Length: 257
Image (cartoon, rainbow, N blue to C red; front, side, top):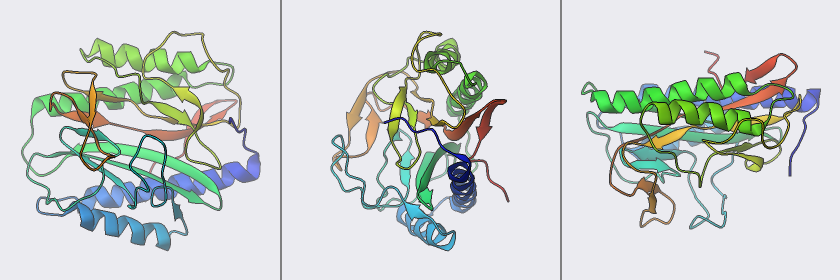
Protein backbone atom coordinates (compact mmCIF):
# COMPACT_ATOMS: atom_id res chain seq x y z
CA UNK A 1 0.00 0.00 0.00
CA UNK A 2 1.20 3.50 -0.89
CA UNK A 3 -0.62 6.45 0.72
CA UNK A 4 -0.69 10.06 -0.40
CA UNK A 5 -1.59 12.21 2.62
CA UNK A 6 -3.94 15.18 2.58
CA UNK A 7 -3.26 18.45 4.42
CA UNK A 8 -4.94 17.30 7.64
CA UNK A 9 -2.97 14.05 7.66
CA UNK A 10 0.27 15.95 6.98
CA UNK A 11 -0.45 18.18 9.95
CA UNK A 12 -0.78 15.09 12.13
CA UNK A 13 2.41 13.67 10.61
CA UNK A 14 4.26 16.82 11.64
CA UNK A 15 3.04 16.43 15.23
CA UNK A 16 4.07 12.77 15.25
CA UNK A 17 7.46 13.63 13.79
CA UNK A 18 8.15 16.36 16.32
CA UNK A 19 7.27 13.98 19.16
CA UNK A 20 9.63 11.32 17.78
CA UNK A 21 12.45 13.85 17.42
CA UNK A 22 11.96 15.27 20.90
CA UNK A 23 11.84 11.83 22.53
CA UNK A 24 15.00 10.69 20.76
CA UNK A 25 16.75 13.84 21.94
CA UNK A 26 15.61 13.20 25.52
CA UNK A 27 16.81 9.60 25.33
CA UNK A 28 20.18 10.68 24.00
CA UNK A 29 20.56 13.04 26.94
CA UNK A 30 19.64 10.24 29.38
CA UNK A 31 21.86 7.55 27.80
CA UNK A 32 24.90 7.89 30.06
CA UNK A 33 27.37 5.28 31.27
CA UNK A 34 25.61 2.95 33.71
CA UNK A 35 22.07 3.62 32.42
CA UNK A 36 20.14 0.42 31.72
CA UNK A 37 18.45 -0.15 28.35
CA UNK A 38 15.25 -1.08 30.18
CA UNK A 39 15.30 2.33 31.87
CA UNK A 40 15.46 4.00 28.46
CA UNK A 41 12.55 1.85 27.33
CA UNK A 42 10.43 2.81 30.35
CA UNK A 43 11.21 6.49 29.80
CA UNK A 44 10.20 6.17 26.16
CA UNK A 45 6.81 4.78 27.13
CA UNK A 46 6.24 7.64 29.58
CA UNK A 47 7.21 10.29 27.01
CA UNK A 48 5.01 8.76 24.33
CA UNK A 49 2.00 8.83 26.64
CA UNK A 50 2.75 12.38 27.84
CA UNK A 51 2.99 13.54 24.22
CA UNK A 52 -0.34 12.02 23.23
CA UNK A 53 1.23 9.35 21.03
CA UNK A 54 0.74 5.62 20.62
CA UNK A 55 3.65 3.19 20.26
CA UNK A 56 4.10 1.40 16.95
CA UNK A 57 6.28 -1.27 18.56
CA UNK A 58 4.60 -2.75 21.63
CA UNK A 59 2.15 -4.95 19.69
CA UNK A 60 4.22 -5.16 16.49
CA UNK A 61 4.48 -8.75 15.24
CA UNK A 62 5.72 -8.97 11.63
CA UNK A 63 6.73 -12.21 9.93
CA UNK A 64 10.47 -11.58 10.40
CA UNK A 65 10.33 -11.08 14.18
CA UNK A 66 9.58 -13.23 17.21
CA UNK A 67 6.66 -10.99 18.10
CA UNK A 68 5.01 -9.13 19.58
CA UNK A 69 8.01 -6.84 20.18
CA UNK A 70 6.70 -5.75 23.60
CA UNK A 71 8.85 -2.60 24.03
CA UNK A 72 8.66 1.09 23.13
CA UNK A 73 12.04 1.73 21.49
CA UNK A 74 14.67 -0.31 19.64
CA UNK A 75 18.02 -0.21 21.44
CA UNK A 76 20.91 -1.60 19.38
CA UNK A 77 24.36 -1.66 21.00
CA UNK A 78 27.72 -2.07 19.22
CA UNK A 79 27.33 -5.03 16.81
CA UNK A 80 23.51 -4.83 16.90
CA UNK A 81 22.05 -2.62 14.18
CA UNK A 82 18.32 -3.22 13.65
CA UNK A 83 15.30 -4.08 15.82
CA UNK A 84 17.40 -4.14 18.99
CA UNK A 85 15.23 -5.43 21.82
CA UNK A 86 15.76 -3.62 25.15
CA UNK A 87 17.16 -5.95 27.79
CA UNK A 88 18.96 -5.83 31.14
CA UNK A 89 22.19 -4.16 30.03
CA UNK A 90 23.95 -1.15 31.57
CA UNK A 91 25.62 1.10 29.00
CA UNK A 92 29.42 1.20 29.11
CA UNK A 93 31.88 3.93 28.19
CA UNK A 94 32.45 3.80 24.43
CA UNK A 95 29.33 1.84 23.53
CA UNK A 96 27.89 2.69 20.11
CA UNK A 97 24.15 2.96 20.70
CA UNK A 98 21.38 3.19 18.11
CA UNK A 99 17.87 4.23 19.17
CA UNK A 100 15.03 3.66 16.69
CA UNK A 101 11.56 4.97 17.49
CA UNK A 102 8.21 4.93 15.72
CA UNK A 103 4.85 6.14 17.02
CA UNK A 104 1.53 7.52 15.85
CA UNK A 105 -0.28 10.73 16.73
CA UNK A 106 -3.96 10.82 15.80
CA UNK A 107 -3.49 7.85 13.49
CA UNK A 108 -0.43 8.99 11.51
CA UNK A 109 3.04 7.51 12.09
CA UNK A 110 6.58 8.88 12.14
CA UNK A 111 9.83 6.93 12.44
CA UNK A 112 13.45 7.98 13.11
CA UNK A 113 16.75 6.61 14.40
CA UNK A 114 19.97 8.03 15.79
CA UNK A 115 23.38 6.48 16.48
CA UNK A 116 25.89 7.94 18.93
CA UNK A 117 28.72 7.01 21.27
CA UNK A 118 28.04 6.77 25.00
CA UNK A 119 30.47 8.31 27.45
CA UNK A 120 33.90 9.79 26.81
CA UNK A 121 35.80 7.04 25.02
CA UNK A 122 35.78 7.67 21.27
CA UNK A 123 36.89 5.23 18.58
CA UNK A 124 37.56 7.07 15.29
CA UNK A 125 36.27 4.06 13.35
CA UNK A 126 32.94 4.29 15.20
CA UNK A 127 32.74 8.03 14.55
CA UNK A 128 33.39 7.42 10.84
CA UNK A 129 30.67 4.78 10.73
CA UNK A 130 28.09 7.13 12.25
CA UNK A 131 29.20 10.02 10.04
CA UNK A 132 28.76 7.89 6.90
CA UNK A 133 25.15 7.08 7.74
CA UNK A 134 24.42 10.73 8.55
CA UNK A 135 25.97 11.91 5.29
CA UNK A 136 24.09 9.20 3.37
CA UNK A 137 20.84 10.31 4.98
CA UNK A 138 21.45 13.91 3.92
CA UNK A 139 22.16 12.74 0.37
CA UNK A 140 19.02 10.59 0.30
CA UNK A 141 16.85 13.43 1.57
CA UNK A 142 18.33 15.81 -1.02
CA UNK A 143 17.32 13.34 -3.75
CA UNK A 144 13.75 13.00 -2.42
CA UNK A 145 11.95 15.48 -4.69
CA UNK A 146 8.59 15.48 -6.41
CA UNK A 147 8.82 13.59 -9.75
CA UNK A 148 12.10 11.94 -8.72
CA UNK A 149 12.21 8.16 -8.40
CA UNK A 150 12.82 5.89 -5.42
CA UNK A 151 15.96 4.72 -7.20
CA UNK A 152 17.33 8.26 -7.04
CA UNK A 153 17.22 8.11 -3.23
CA UNK A 154 18.76 4.63 -3.14
CA UNK A 155 21.51 5.66 -5.54
CA UNK A 156 22.39 8.75 -3.52
CA UNK A 157 22.60 6.75 -0.29
CA UNK A 158 24.61 3.94 -1.85
CA UNK A 159 27.17 6.28 -3.37
CA UNK A 160 27.96 7.73 0.04
CA UNK A 161 28.10 4.43 1.92
CA UNK A 162 30.15 2.63 -0.73
CA UNK A 163 32.34 5.68 -1.25
CA UNK A 164 33.19 5.50 2.46
CA UNK A 165 34.32 1.90 2.00
CA UNK A 166 31.31 0.03 3.39
CA UNK A 167 29.30 -2.76 1.79
CA UNK A 168 25.51 -2.38 1.74
CA UNK A 169 22.92 -4.89 2.90
CA UNK A 170 19.83 -4.91 0.65
CA UNK A 171 17.47 -6.91 2.89
CA UNK A 172 16.31 -4.00 5.05
CA UNK A 173 16.02 -0.32 4.17
CA UNK A 174 13.68 2.64 4.19
CA UNK A 175 9.98 2.53 3.51
CA UNK A 176 6.78 4.38 2.97
CA UNK A 177 4.91 5.42 6.10
CA UNK A 178 1.51 6.93 6.90
CA UNK A 179 -1.46 5.43 8.71
CA UNK A 180 0.77 2.41 9.36
CA UNK A 181 4.48 2.25 10.17
CA UNK A 182 5.69 0.11 7.27
CA UNK A 183 4.31 0.66 3.78
CA UNK A 184 5.49 0.55 0.20
CA UNK A 185 7.62 1.69 -1.47
CA UNK A 186 10.74 -0.05 -0.19
CA UNK A 187 13.85 2.16 -0.27
CA UNK A 188 16.99 0.08 -0.67
CA UNK A 189 20.21 1.66 0.56
CA UNK A 190 21.78 1.29 -2.87
CA UNK A 191 20.29 1.22 -6.34
CA UNK A 192 20.04 2.67 -9.82
CA UNK A 193 18.90 6.24 -10.37
CA UNK A 194 15.80 6.78 -12.48
CA UNK A 195 14.14 3.52 -11.43
CA UNK A 196 11.15 2.74 -9.25
CA UNK A 197 8.11 4.59 -7.96
CA UNK A 198 7.77 8.24 -8.93
CA UNK A 199 7.59 10.52 -5.87
CA UNK A 200 4.48 12.68 -5.40
CA UNK A 201 3.66 15.51 -2.99
CA UNK A 202 1.96 14.11 0.10
CA UNK A 203 4.04 10.93 0.16
CA UNK A 204 5.76 10.16 3.47
CA UNK A 205 9.04 8.25 3.44
CA UNK A 206 11.20 6.89 6.25
CA UNK A 207 14.72 7.06 4.81
CA UNK A 208 17.21 5.03 6.84
CA UNK A 209 20.82 4.37 5.86
CA UNK A 210 22.47 1.77 8.05
CA UNK A 211 25.77 -0.01 7.70
CA UNK A 212 28.14 -2.49 9.33
CA UNK A 213 31.88 -1.90 9.51
CA UNK A 214 33.19 -4.93 7.62
CA UNK A 215 30.28 -7.01 6.31
CA UNK A 216 26.85 -6.86 4.70
CA UNK A 217 25.66 -10.03 6.42
CA UNK A 218 23.21 -10.11 9.34
CA UNK A 219 22.47 -12.69 12.02
CA UNK A 220 19.52 -12.91 14.41
CA UNK A 221 20.10 -12.71 18.13
CA UNK A 222 18.59 -15.34 20.42
CA UNK A 223 15.72 -12.94 21.26
CA UNK A 224 14.37 -13.46 17.72
CA UNK A 225 14.40 -9.72 17.00
CA UNK A 226 17.80 -8.10 17.32
CA UNK A 227 19.83 -8.17 14.10
CA UNK A 228 23.61 -8.11 14.48
CA UNK A 229 26.56 -7.95 12.12
CA UNK A 230 27.64 -11.47 11.22
CA UNK A 231 31.27 -10.68 12.11
CA UNK A 232 30.59 -8.90 15.40
CA UNK A 233 31.71 -5.58 13.89
CA UNK A 234 30.29 -2.22 14.91
CA UNK A 235 27.22 -0.78 13.19
CA UNK A 236 25.34 2.50 12.78
CA UNK A 237 21.85 3.53 11.66
CA UNK A 238 20.37 6.97 11.02
CA UNK A 239 16.79 7.72 9.93
CA UNK A 240 14.30 10.53 9.34
CA UNK A 241 10.70 10.61 8.19
CA UNK A 242 10.22 13.14 5.39
CA UNK A 243 7.22 14.46 3.48
CA UNK A 244 7.55 14.98 -0.27
CA UNK A 245 6.48 18.51 -1.23
CA UNK A 246 6.61 20.61 -4.38
CA UNK A 247 9.75 22.22 -2.91
CA UNK A 248 11.64 19.08 -1.91
CA UNK A 249 11.62 16.91 1.20
CA UNK A 250 10.37 18.31 4.50
CA UNK A 251 12.07 16.60 7.43
CA UNK A 252 9.40 15.82 10.05
CA UNK A 253 11.42 14.11 12.80
CA UNK A 254 13.76 16.89 13.86
CA UNK A 255 13.51 17.82 17.56
CA UNK A 256 11.66 21.07 18.26
CA UNK A 257 13.07 21.80 21.72
